[in-house]
Length: 216
Image 1 (cartoon, rainbow, N blue to C red):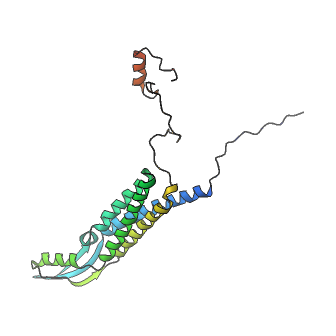
Image 2: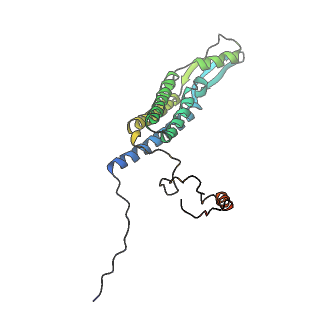
Image 3: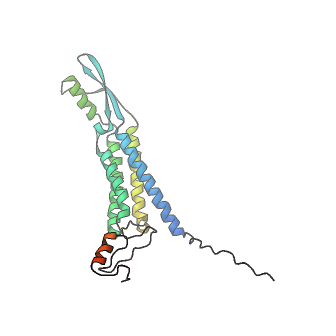
């Protein structure tokens, strides 16, 4: 008669709930949208937004204006939004709502600044006046590129990331310093009990005549 050999026991991880899946997806979407939006806004600010010519003594001079020449708001708010996106996971409750609101407003500000600068000529007029030496000189043959609208699209991505943080952020995890390597909460040690991970405390306990291996 043969005895049945018990099958090895496997501890399967608990099944992920729909709420956990939704939280994970919203986190991934917010991080992706916010990071891509901030990177695109910074890139667009370094590209040419407008072209034109200025009449100078030697003839016509071609001039260009980068996004940073037109307005520094999109780049500045992109950095603010990126910092807010990271800070969302470092705070809880009311702090998280405020940071998410800052992220949302940063995106809206990028959109507004980019659209206002899409047909701006003041940056090129200033360059034309400097090149000609005449403050009354203005730019001729003004044309604009699509980079201001790319910056506006970047702002929309940051804005959507902020809205996700506002609506779904309550279920997102927060960073904490009191965790072990395996992710479990680190127990508090009793006052005066040496930490076995710190050899200097063990030596001090021995000098006092204490047993450092004794449990508190």
